[in-house]
Length: 78
Image (cartoon, rainbow, N blue to C red; front, side, top):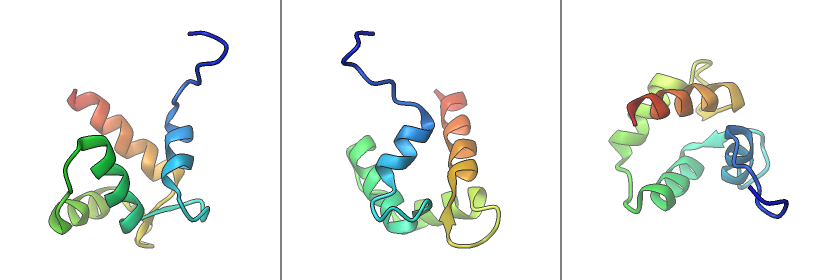
């Protein structure tokens, strides 16, 4: 890695996805980010599944800890 390259840690990805700066990723931010990464739009059902599994406090958004759990699970599936 050169000095000009930035390492994309889960926290940096989270911050990039958090479009409104609320320190959480809501359903819409998650949908936009996954569409950009996957190249296809995720269905409402897919977003529901992710939110039900990883939104541990039930506030309707993923905080950094919940997002890290999501990323770890996705990394294991690769």
